[in-house]
Length: 283
Length: 270
Image (cartoon, rainbow over all chains, first blue to last red):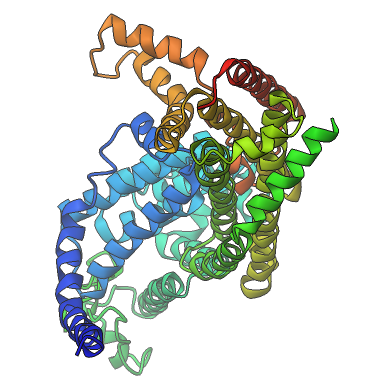
């Protein structure tokens, strides 16, 4: 009998732990939201002291927690709430307090905040911090310049950033004349395409790659439609009232599908935009 | 001198006899596997993640010696009275202490060498898997210097543990004192910075400030040996810093060991 007991308890223990596993996971998920951001609220010195000599690895795990948190919410096909975005931003501030030279959190903020959360000032603040600590890196200034031009439509603010970026080692050759070429582009779409294509070239994470590719594809479609609008304007000396007019004029076979599930439409001044605002639409 | 090396050799053999190498090898394999696997979740700083992991493992492996083995071997010798068989031979007490320190230092060296080699292997595996492009900033010189600085910190902590062992018979108390020394050594600098910041927002009494200032001079500044972040970003670690920190570790260790020898020589063993 005494030989059977351990096996009996082993079997019961195993079965119970399998049953409880999903409950434990859901508790963890529920509290994950509550625990997010609390660590980031600690002052930088306290955070650094608490991490002892493991600042690097602590920042890695904290960043991983942040991207998992944001990724989970994006995967649920729902855009995170304002409060959730602010928690993510707080965490990123904590990550960069632990390791101010860690580039991924800054890049993550740049890829997500202005595009997805309408939080360009938050991304700019983090990029300013990156510029302070990564003194030989052209990227913080490059992204600050991009944000000023693309999101604020402020070429005068963007140009000095790009000039500073161009003067730093490793800056791509096209950066030197970018400030001057802004007026040639005429709109932000092309710059967005250049920017996203450059990001894609140097990113290894498959999920981020897929995210960027989708955004790039959408911008390319907008660019294509805007070019067709220009052709229409050239031929008829007026702007089309809707994109359907491009089909009627044989400039397009069909209106392309927005990868985010929205609908492409045209404004009174001929700019093309999508109703999804490049945020995944619920099906 | 011969006596010292005999004790050092015996200590190293005893340490390796605890099958510690097996656990270190398992840790090394885990470092390679997890560092390479986990770095794939990040966007660009893949090399930084792998180096962070590797250097954290080197630190942990090194800390195993003062936290577990030194306490076990030195305090255990006193607690279990096995020291009598050693001191029955014509062995000066100073030779016993110095020999133990050298033996434990060699043991920590072996462990940290295995783990840092595993880290280099992880970097190589990462290069193969993700491409050389992500490893342009990796600097082997900074990596080796960071490991060496870490080793110096472990030696320093070892000397402190030996001092605590000479002060008390209880291995439990020695473990507590070691943990306290490590925590104070790692945080004292940050605490001093925090309280001296004009807007820290925490009102502190004068006596606490004085205690912290005294602790700053008594306890070793272990955080200053931490060059892991610089190595992770491939930044050059100045030679002057390396030399100063090595000198600091040596001076502090010699002082702690001298004090340990003085106490141990005057101590009546039960």
